[in-house]
Picture (cartoon, rainbow, N blue to C red):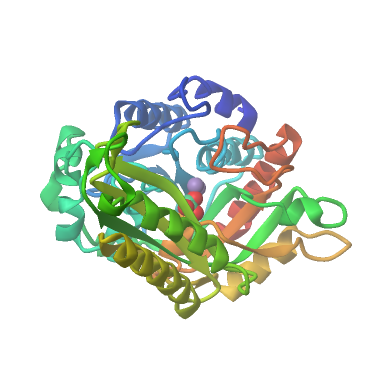
Length: 405
Ligand code: GLV
Ligand code: MN
Ligand code: MN
């Protein structure tokens, strides 16, 4: 089946009528439907499907043996996300199997498709949960204690899906079996679209260092109509100062990013001065020190404004990962093999995080990008043209064929 046909099969799963787009959070009933859909699609292709102890789903073409070539992505989304971030990599992997089968290809190396769980961190706050747990970059006890906005812990959510929470954590056996991992993903910017010839496919070079920090500012809850200015301890003011500082911090840092995309006043009444405000800073930069300098600048602004307003501030790091530089041998091999008479396909960096970035610390890893004509992502308008998606599938099939020879 074509990649667009496969995307069509899940087009109605997890639509979010309020936000638009899709809300497909990890360990939810929506994600479970998608996981079942994947397992059935893989089984129809005679792939052997199993779920590992961190909730990642594997579908094997051939016996699970060492030095396997692995491809896949994720099916969960941000709140109100697009149709392509994650699912394009999963559907392209299934479609690439169809392309290879139709050509009569038999892999000499074992080949498996993988769906990683909770890549966006949309529910438990930590991105790339499945690949972090598996690769040991997230402590299993800390992970079990993570809780969602309703207070449900990851341990509880995992148990409700039939996973043993005690089994969460580093999976050296699974890692030892991976010869290499290739993730196909929609591009989440416009680098490809701005290149001459607007190529359909590119290869990834690197990912920005990236972390998430939770700021909690406490003040005094009070009446919006009766509280005089001198009596106000309003945590919304230092929160606003921090949001502005996040933008200011980017002024002299061309490649850094700082975003406050989520802000939660307590109790959250129109006619109530909040007693507390929580907000999350997503900061990224070409290297860790620069990302941390951005955070320090925002924190300093929040602290100064909190002191002026008589509020208290606490800051907690919820996740962090250093910059990723993909395996140069695999990167150059893929770029050359997918190139034509004009040379290799483009090799481009990204600011978006991926399971491939987590696995890169443990196994040779590469990524293929499919052109995104608007660059919009993490939003309902995210788009990739069908012809580019097909070109991505064909590229992935060629890469898998070459790696599995
Ligand atoms: C995930 O897509 C991220 O970059 O936050
Ligand atoms: Mn994403
Ligand atoms: Mn993604």
